[in-house]
Length: 363
Ligand code: FUB
Image (cartoon, rainbow, N blue to C red; front, side, top):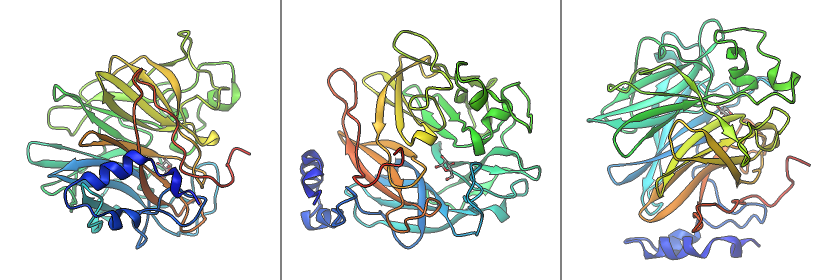
């Protein structure tokens, strides 16, 4: 029984919140000994959670997994999602709501398939949904859709963001109001096809072909004031080891794969990301949103299921970690969103989160 693995500060925090009952909290404990947390919702399959607080409520922008019959392969053919449902809940975790479809692939003229991991941001009365999709040429682009409500429905822009490519957009708004979009994912996320500066369907062999080369890097750009386009040329984000050398392609436990996410703590920028085929969420830090970032360690150990994708959110004084696994279905392409807590140590480091105690995907 892993009841004892529920961090005591989570119990203390949630029980101390106004209107939180500890019986409500106990519903989030899991009787299945392999898992620390229970799925947030079970009505639909949900994945890739990007959590934000809007209007004193937590909104989670997630992928909506479906069974499409796609054959599982290294390009993510089995992730054939066609719409987004926003999830929301009160700050104490109560009143969890699955909102109606917020955006469907049929609403977006340029998008043909694969509504993968989204994110959202707010500015001046408008909510912005950022999402990847494949266009008519099977090339991933990033789109933006807007709404006056955090849960949508969202109205898509008629074209993808100019100069956008690959997957997993995540928008970070800094203390001065500057907004940056981070994105990228190799293999099925196609980032390796852009290494020459333009699209090459045969891709670069860099990822698997030249193990001693620096690994392919996540990308970023500042957003325009209207939040709809890149305000500058896309930039690669360096990830270095503590000696200042680039993380190499062969360094599978540390190299970037997909799912970049930024949070800021005590003035330090934390970029966390998935290592893909080693199933970790790693984290690196910088004193600048553009980097370079220095690799620091593991943020999340492997979950059940191939993919590991997350976000972080500060609620009051407590940091939360949103993630997914496959507890409900046991299938890699039918995932369910969960959350737990974490904290930063005095030196800024973070102890690795462990939410799954069953068979590790690495072994
Ligand atoms: O959900 C589809 C893809 O799987 C995401 O875009 C990746 O980050 C991985 O979680």
